[in-house]
Length: 415
Image (cartoon, rainbow, N blue to C red; front, side, top):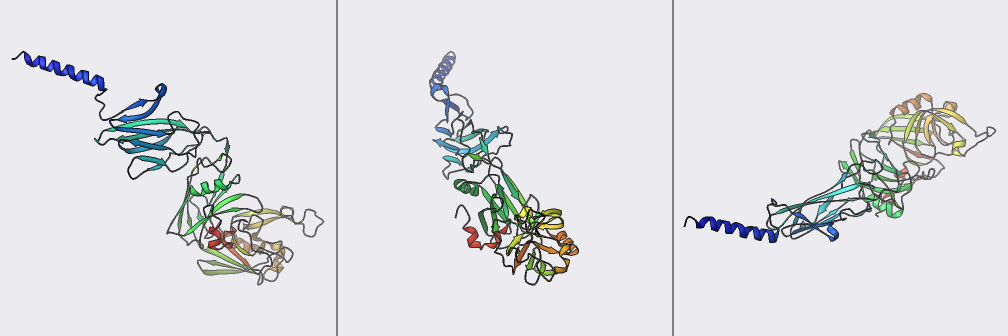
């Protein structure tokens, strides 16, 4: 009897070795091995009954940066899914990680954003079968490089304190096509504290031809509002395979509610702050043959000295013309891209508060212009009334406020 136990143990060990060899079982600690496709290429990963499929497939390329990444599992549920870039993009841009979401049953994961062009991405996935056994897999592919690129400039600058009329604005180096406008707008999110209702609108500057998309609230911002822009633009095709390459994150705060009212009939500029009139300044606006724009204009920038010439605004190029001018103008606050400023105009001191004698700008004495210049910030509003000229176009500077909220919403690519 003592001699039989070793023989039984040896037989059991032999049978176990035969079974494991036939079924490829082994101590993988709950992990799985990648199965092989044609020619030995990786296809899907299996752990017990869980089978993972990743699209795009490993080694696929060049992949459309705007195309989706999809992960699916049969015979189990998905756990973590990550899509991360490997290194930098082909043109040196820092690429973005790709986000996505699982379906309610955790059987599929689909990306919800575009990818950086010219970038290698690795998809890492975990899954679990009904018995609780887990598997992991990784797949790498590369996106197509951007043969053509588009650039974007954002206003306000990050961490700025802006006036109540400044929209969130993205201006493009190259105009965005119709399909691209919808794609761009879907990639943009504005959040505010406190909550503010508003929307996106597409505009083109009538002077420069620059196209932009602005987000403005239904009414002027309230002081103290915190505004954050999240623009997931890397890999968005703006038309003709011309890609945006970078994401943008921008945050700013609304400062004093400074709104000034220029009355071209009484020749005064009434400056209010947070609803209170702080000063009423005598001024001289555009004379009858060169009237000032009517409507709401927004401070774009200010410079202590600006060279202004009649030729730059197509008034007069010859020194023999009575309308010719070439001046270094002090304390200039710009309101439109077409050349409307609030500035010092000492040559018209005799007209201040009495008559309009400029070529369209709002002129003041040097002392008053210095005071106004010192307070003005981008986003302050100047509302002109009483002129014989039309209302300034929405795209001429930030003339957005000359449209009603309903008119503004109609400019959205998604309306």
